[in-house]
Length: 279
Image (cartoon, rainbow, N blue to C red):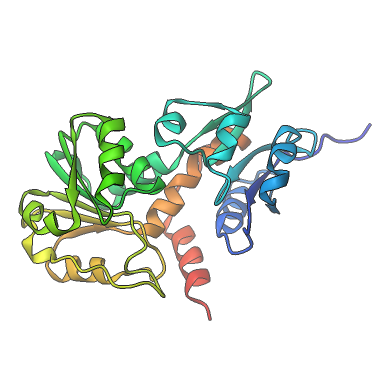
């Protein structure tokens, strides 16, 4: 009698070769003593439907989903409230024979804030920069946590207005030129844009205008310490970086696939940091 095959999950993307997800999940499999696997599957858009519908037949218990497939998998699965609200899914799993999907960027962002800046949620007003997919996850998470007013600034104000209509009256669209006016009231500042990332233009925001007890979060994790976070730290503000969100968003998928809830440890963070900074 042959032994049952160890459960395996995968990352679906195009391209996907540079993802750190395998490093994270292999670390947890090893430290928790679980026989399992996690591999990268480069799937072009024209093959997505066939790949996802045959996920179980291919031997996978679930998957992570990255660019450009996060929106496409919604129609191929049963999305939960988070995935529907965000308009994108990054995690697939099977329950009662059904392929389900969620967006763990929401809890990844919130979990990282809780770990990095406990008490951040006393903020009544937050300022979120950017109106893309990551911004949707951030806004959903902040509303879910009870933040009363979210100012959403985007270079194209129409995109911010679209999100505000979707999420309701607690979200206030702001022009990029209007950021300075909002900063003094924002106890939480979140950058969801690519500004400040290696190879991208800098993010020109004056953190000196923020209240003394403000928290600053940046979803960019290359570099690990963005100019925004460096400026916030120099002013003595609490910060939450993009690498922390990357690690925390991976927790729930692992638990859904392998049945154990892993922890984001200093050792894991050091492992991924070393991989990000190697030449």
